[in-house]
Image 1 (cartoon, rainbow, N blue to C red):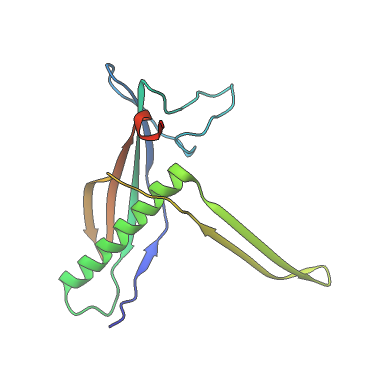
Image 2: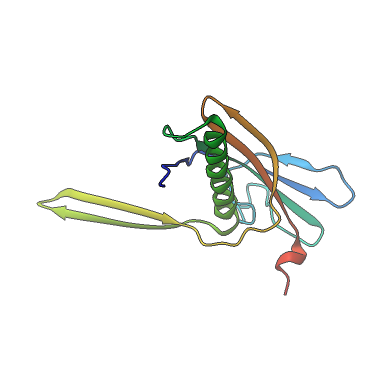
Length: 152
């Protein structure tokens, strides 16, 4: 049996917290990837030995129209929302590969294709909150990154 699942690829909330071991974490709302260096005129948010980075995202999933029961609709929407949240975390940590191609004929664009992909392993992500309303499931998920996870 095939189920049609729609993944809403909207990032409704994205926060990054830089936390010192002893101090209360400072909340930083940004669209910059967590481990990217930004220019000298802005603050740098880097993963260091003394700082952990918390990445928090909200994944969204829509319940299919042709379900047998409300419980099935909820389960499928939740599964789509969890998959979306994992993808959003992977995009923040590893980045997104973007491939584009344009077909131009007589100085006019005939066809334009853009493909995006992400390739990452996400472990130890925690679901913080789940909400389901009007067929839309939203999952708030977070992951803590520490320097020891990436040191070899």
